[in-house]
Amino acid sequence: MPFHIVLVEPEIPANTGNIARTCAATGTHLHLVRPLGFRTDDATLKRAGLDYWYAVNLTYYDSFDEVKERFQGHRFFMASTRATHRYSDFEYRDGDLFVFGKETKGLPQQLLDDHPDTLIRMPMTDKVRSLNLANSAAIVVYEALRQNDFPGLFDK
Image (cartoon, rainbow, N blue to C red; front, top):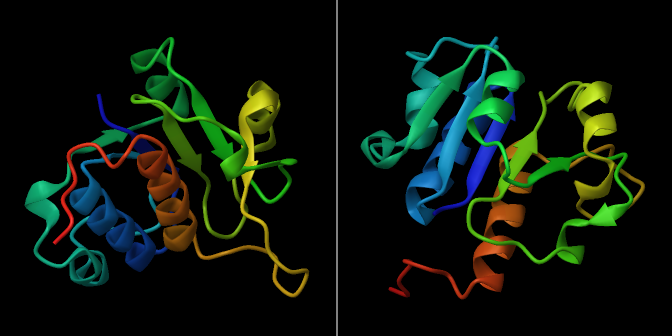
């Protein structure tokens, strides 16, 4: 079972496109929770994902509750600048879901409150509020893959 990236109400098509490309390269499933801040036929979205969209396992949802229902029994790691645990503090396993919020506001407080033990953050200086969404998703999924010896991936 692969890892999963869940984007809750993403706003910037280029970020989602870049994350889709990372998902295609790593076999990670991508889940998008509406409303989206762009149209899925947006040229920027397609350009950022290049010609890899065929390789992305992509599912759309109308609410985060739909994601939770589909993945009952799985672990949800919520990325937030308000988290106290580093992303590297956990041992990840197949089937884990990494959840990221919209670029301007992050995840809703209720989702953070529902998962207090699996909130994760990336260490950074106090010069910025947050990292780019696509970079954050790539950092986390590659850490999970590294911990599991990059299953199904090849060194070129």
